Length: 309
Image 1 (cartoon, rainbow, N blue to C red):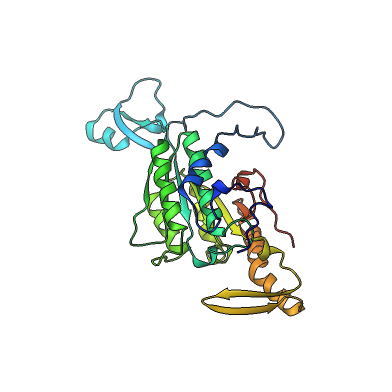
Image 2 (cartoon, one colour):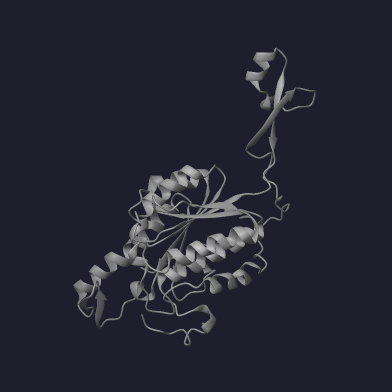
């Protein structure tokens, strides 16, 4: 990895860019404290501000006898049939929404040529998400593709955020030996989430493209889904020059002056991004591309990022 932190104006307090530091993730709270950008409808019309409560909620509380004025759609037919008197269901308003971070910890993320590793950027993006969730009043949790480590259970307040940040710091320090892939992480998420949750997936494009589009669509149907794809600038725009890489203690040389090598590079790194944006964009899924040298909150932009052809 080439150290260009001073060139990009990154402070020394952010660490060496090789492993995330808990202190730097805590410091990212300042990004979540920025006022959110104004949101307007597609037609540009003003409207009422959204309520912090999510309607009547999804949690059943109890049933009581029906009284005039109750919504007939909420009649509890089972209790009504058992007692012979009309009963209606009562629901508890949801004041806290669950935000879950799904962390891809595949080995391909532990690489970088500008400012920081992609793994460090993933941890930082997750930290921004955690602090933003806390600012909204959400309960925040996190998990990865492991059958041995339990998910970080959703919890509110700064304590809940710090538990997630501690997990991100550990997970992205080095590739976990028990990583079972993004698919397994999504399996875990499907089991622990209830409809209406916010779901942020941090993933390498090589892993995300292996997930069937229908699966992404099913997740987006039940949850507020955002997919953040971690990339390095070299992957998207390689130089037309010979490059040397060290992988698994072996040195690999690629002559990117050759057209066939450039085509293979493009097919491996760029085409998966474009395909994900095409497939998931058609399903109205928010897909963001976050470079390792970009601001760690850049994925919060309202408009999806376009990958150059």
